[in-house]
Image (cartoon, rainbow, N blue to C red; front, side, top):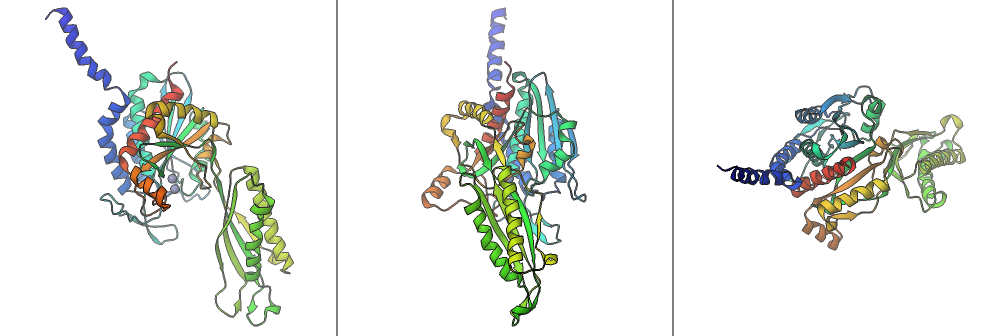
Length: 443
Ligand SMILES: [Zn+2]
Ligand SMILES: [Zn+2]
């Protein structure tokens, strides 16, 4: 064969393989296997603090791709729980360190989607009660997108330079997993990131699209237990008692004035009393009433002020009712979740890259919300630019119908939540890969 002909043949053979390097073609090639991974993860969910098998699976997949993987990261305040966090590092020359997070855990929800790959898993929760377990928050979508992103980035190593840290976080639903990993010296034992990114699926957004919220996107959540102690007695003789039920009722009403009268209307905040329990029967004034509250804010100083107000009001109302000092109410604040602040400069940069990769019409700004998530802790109080972006997960026709009718689609944590795997996974991998390439692209 003449030399030039040989060259033509070689070139002809090369062209399709060069083309196959486009991200879309790589995704086409792998989507079937990701769908299998997704269904497998969906059928085998594990509760928070118990993500042992899920974590081992993700770690194994990343090891196969050539990452240096460390497992069992995370120290909880409850020492009976094991930390199933994992970190996988891929060093690829000089440049920034980018952290990509996925959650690993599922929820105590009995699945009712009727999907062929529905979860049948049942387990006993920490209280010994049998519960169904379901990936009702879509963390299986996140894990699959995460593994797909890791694969794309190992194959595209020629296009980026820096250190990639893929992080599997346990116990997101209970709000203590990110802190458990940080407490286990995450940033001393592994490269500290220059940027941290995560995605979360969103039922209100069409599949094929991504969404973003600059600045505060999700609130901090703090759980508070209040024990109002009175002096019990006969229901017919209130004068011989200090009735904690009446005090509790006054407390509930007084708490409503914190957000409405003490807080700036420009600082979003919520104080919700979600549980109130006291007493046993008609004619007994009980000794105590227990309340459970959730407090949501964006700013940390607002959160602190509200917690102080709650304590002051509860004690003040009890004092007014004449409850003796040694029976003063007990206010217990539990470890909560910090707010999620999306670094505006970082999100702007990613949105530019998303628009190029997915088209302007598939990148949508979305309003903030008062739900919460512990990803923000990885930013170390905003000192590391971090952002979470939304991944559309519902059929466009259903989103349209829901907007028109005002009837919400089954949301996150619903037993009926059923994200559309295709093209949600495709978009998840494409968007996350695009985000990392944008931050680590070679000059
Ligand atoms: Zn959730
Ligand atoms: Zn979630």
